[in-house]
Length: 634
Image (cartoon, rainbow, N blue to C red; front, side, top):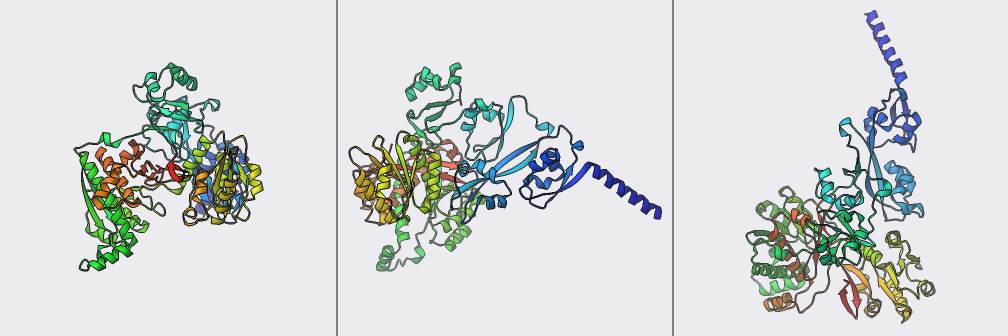
């Protein structure tokens, strides 16, 4: 027995001595990373991760790591760094150091991916990208042929941009990545040609539009579409000299767009007319779930029912919305499109939604429109996730949970703001641009400055006014002045519109802009519409005023004895779009990927699949005040 114990101890000792020769331990210090530790011990990061797999997501202070000696590391061991991002909204009193510590990254890494932070401090409420580094071992079987490399998709990158930057067509990119989905995911790993950094093409969506060549399309067809000769196209796209091929991305002058819509990233998309593409053999089945509150109406009392109509705003909105839908249903019927519409009363409560989910069968339907309020909508869309039934949110854009089956029909404030900023950046290159923002909009001010570096910033006095002298000195006499105002404070907006209006004259042109038109413009008489009109005030919006002379207004007035309001028009536009999409193809998810922007009386619909979740409408308008009217800016 004693001999066995002695032998066991000797074995443990020998293993310990062997381990001491081949391995060490390291206690992680503050600020250290896998790379810095690997560099210190002269080993590869992969060698450390191989012994400490839990460290792939990062290391924290005081973590104990097993470190191989450099002599034990095989020369052919390799790893790949994979960078993904999380979005962090800066809170009060947060610093770069505290944020870096929270996410276990370096301050320099945060600055690297948020370059504006090299020259300024953080602002409360702004959103920054935090890199998250992981390491993926590259196996022998993962080796790629010469000329190909792995590429990590950046946020909001699409196929066409990656294909263009690497000198290939979209079909060629898809051929290299047969498992690639319709929408690329942030952080997704794909294969691309190994292009030298100096040869990577840069997408400049400020100066140019980008067009994807269609199958069998030649230079003559491009001349018909865009009015450009072969030599002009080749001058901008030397690779086209050898001939055009389907999927090739061409760079075109910004003013060249033909009968196409320009996307936010500069990509040209064909204007698609669903009416010309309907399949009359299909019958669409749609549920309209709105708060009629029939359980609260006393149908035995005419006076009581009338009183309910007068007092209940949500009921009135529902009736107006549905009345517009009825006109849309009749309109598509005249086109030969068949539809079956089921009206369900949500009662305006979550309890009412629960009743519908428990009692009504949604199995054979193609889509649901409604409910109105975000709580009711979220409950219904969540309950229908398992059936993969598309659910359209008619009005609210805030607090809607974007599940996989959700279509958010109202563009978000962020979408509107991005489109306005892109508009200013693209069309304001020869303009003198000034930005005035209150303290609540410093993040927007910084976003504008990042996109338009030449923009001049004018400070406010306690968020209440700007100095007239300071503003006058900042204006240009040689260039048109574009003044971007970011605030929803009535005193500040009143002051700025008054000052700008007094400073404009025949020699000095001033145009006013905002990326978000808040309710202050509507509720205050001090912000004069006459001044806004004189300043050609531009802003983004989800809808535009429609002409009273169109056929819809006449049909609606004949049927209901009154002019349609914005809710009736919204109901018409949304129902028309849903029914025409279903008449084109029953799979609304596929339709969203195939069909570009559609437009009706006052609304546009251009659904984009989000990286996580459902579909967001990015169809919006830029409008301006002109002679006391609101007109779309083309």
